[in-house]
Length: 417
Image (cartoon, rainbow, N blue to C red; front, top):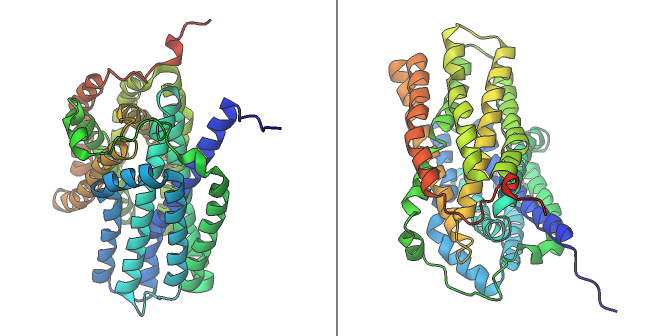
């Protein structure tokens, strides 16, 4: 007797689970690179000048657009789910090897290994994007992007704070082998879901992906402008917060706790504000609604700075509200860009736009702290707030220019049948 095909809700659940597992896996090496490694290196006695090289670990996420076409076409040829599992397995093997390469004795080799680890998962991210773009457009785009934010942040917490806790007890080898174990569990969970990763059109349309086709789209420049502009001010503020706290004589424990609180508020905002807004109104209307409170709250730290030394609870509440609205706005923007991405190039278009945001983060990080050292925190915070307001003149026209998305149908506009 033939097994009946899975119901549509069941298939959607399995696909969302596969997407969450892959985005969560990608967050683990990102957390190691961006949150834990510099602390581990400093504890190992590595000079600050060499620790500065950890900034290179962000490059795979910012430059993955250059191999997104190759990865997209490889997925069409050999299967997206199969390649996702193979990249995942190669990362597990690399973590096992990295456990034998202590950074205090082999600094450049261990740094290169972590760089390769992030390159592997940046490549898997292209495959994950292909699945999300192909299956989760329209009303499901907000849910897909909310899951992306939550899963990736949870992975970063495991790879960042979790790795530091294990390193403190078991050393470098223990931390890397623990990551290998975590990734192995996620790989095993992903194995029966590999078919869910395949884009919907893989059997009916095998058009090769080409960047030239992306660039020829008449509204490409507006999509790219949106991806570059919408996050600059909030990224700059997030990168300025840590040195601001230290110079205000707050403790390292509080700085770390506040950072974790802001991350969790951002994830909650994506789930509780961004996803429902996109589901009910569509991504364009959600952007038009959420951009105003999100931009207004960019001035929170400037206003707290102007009051003198704010209390801890004011920082938790004020910055929590800012990050919660920003998380909802973030999900609505990427839901629109997901709808815009082409079904024929499911891994290429969305990944290319993600690189726009990543390069913006790099520029924000390189500019904001030097600016504060020249003119002080108060003026820098005010300029960043004003910059966020000026970005409205780029984000809003770009959003309107992308209005022709056939997938962006708000639930409230559907007449009951």
